Length: 174
Ligand SMILES: Cc1cc2nc3c(=O)[nH]c(=O)nc-3n(C[C@H](O)[C@H](O)[C@H](O)COP(=O)(O)O)c2cc1C
Image (cartoon, rainbow, N blue to C red; front, side, top):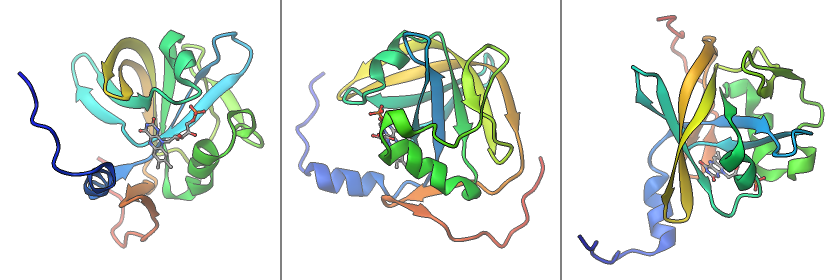
């Protein structure tokens, strides 16, 4: 089946997509050479399957970290809380070599380098089971082996910017 050519330009498409509010994550893994951590800010994270537990995210083919994520066995997805805005910016706009400056690291149970930060709203250690090419991105599906969560307020991204409007509602713990 052939798709009808778009009647909108890239800027309009981006603006329309921006109406969808998302959370913000940082995804970390070990570099191909096993010598250093790799990480970047990602908002394309979503849930896929409860049984077995699976999630997805997509990575630009232009990303410098692409080859590391293509080859890695596992990665950790950290869901950021509103107090971690500085990390979201550091891992999106800073050079890869400087992203972990001043950032405490530990290892997830499966050995993946991850942020050692109790402020994270949740984290998921995933096995890198599926990579699917889609236009200028690769979709990664991860099988979740371990996860943790807290009840901090999430960091929200909307209309091309971080949404810092504080919620007046208390967080539920279910
Ligand atoms: C809030 C936010 C969400 C982002 N989400 C994605 C995403 O889902 N996929 C992607 O490829 N890049 C995304 N980016 C851009 C990357 O974080 C950015 O291009 C980063 O520098 C790529 O790192 P790398 O080139 O070292 O791999 C996002 C940036 C921000 C600020």
